[in-house]
Length: 326
Image (cartoon, rainbow, N blue to C red):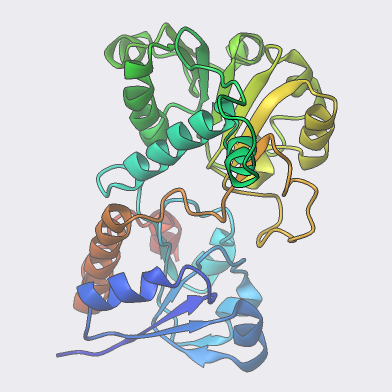
């Protein structure tokens, strides 16, 4: 049996170790803080970013590195050009087919309901022994859900929102009336209909990747266009929202509230003004952290590592063409 070492750049997401060890017990797995990796270096064939920034300088500190394998889909923190220049393969695990998309979609529904039913206030009320029957919540029934990004997660979300009797609209790179019909959505438009999505959304769900084109896509101007008392739910990437603009909108009472699993800077400062607000439901980047999702991702990651060892083509290698040119 050929052994190898996998290093995780970060000490959070500790369940990763358990599920990876179950799927690939023959591999040695170490979880090391990214700053320690930069300072001290390490020897490993495979690196899992775990939300850490992976640039060329860090790659050079990992002796024998052959594969950067994301635990999930997002690769915005990996310098692909630097990896290709060093002939290091970069691969990810798409959300569809692992249970990850479904898990994130479940969290989005939970967050929308928790904000609508004013869960933080409701918990405070019962613990304080206050009069029963309050606060009054808001139903999803009959309201419009705007899904920004109708990919794997967006589609899983639409399937779960449909039974709540919500009208659904969405945005993709290109309009897709056939997909809209299949999902029971009123329309799926291209980016040219973005302003229309803002205006119609009672509930805005962010389900798209972070890029230079989508960074701070929900800014002051976009927030001003949302339907009055809209609810924002973000389990994608914190950089999609201008946090300062979101705080102003919340403080001015223009929003029903926000459900947030991701933030501009992670970990979030415990002193952040977002925390402790009765109109914010916040969690620590755990929307996709479920038994089903982690087991599915671990299976895909382990299979790709075994392909690497066997000299076979990797699944979902995003820099395959760049490596071939070299």
